[in-house]
Image (cartoon, one colour):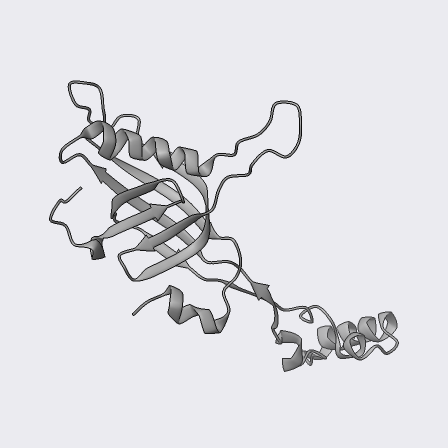
Length: 191
């Protein structure tokens, strides 16, 4: 519904059937994390090189204790890339009724809960996992293949005389379904 607020201040969450539009709230953030490990930090040079290990390690530890000289090297601190996490989004979505509280707030919350939920069969397999959504955050981040991991909303938010929320703050934890290649970053994070 037209509200006079710039699309740059809105979050659009869409599936093939539904779309929820809210306002970007305080504290919304995006995270892209690489997994780096330090696999050699507890090994001595003899252990790394595959030499006679336990006795040399014990000898090196005794020498270090007595002299303050260590067998550790800069190589021990070397980080090794172990993979990339999919992008993560912690979104605060402000929903506000301007014309119809039932549609703009209550139905929007219900739709987000549906987007986060599976459709399982009672006794047989082959149910449906929660569907993937497309996120468009302020027209600067556009990513499809996103799953909603968590939906939190306020139960004590103000209500209309009909019992619908007049506004509500919804917190979403979302994640891309796969990691992003370097070549795809500029197509997702639009500047």
